[in-house]
Amino acid sequence: MHYAYINAALHKAGVKPSQLARKLDVPRSNVSGVIHGKAKSRRIAKAIADVTGLSINELWPDVYPARSPKSSKRSRARKAA
Image (cartoon, rainbow, N blue to C red; front, side, top):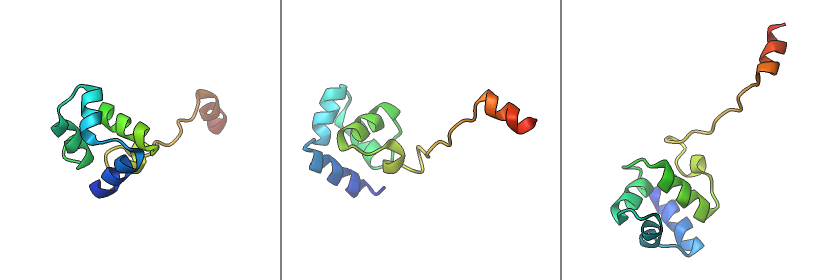
């Protein structure tokens, strides 16, 4: 997702990136870097996702792709039979 949409989602949630940085005890530049896709931090990305109500893979699909459900040993055994 384009950084402007992420900033808009934060704005809609009533949270400024600087507030999020203070809450996470990280520099504002780290939060900005994650928003702009120039830095990678699952912790910061998760916090942004939690605040906006969007998933990490919606916000950064190239960085955190949606995981396919893992098949269980039981279902793998059935497929092998």
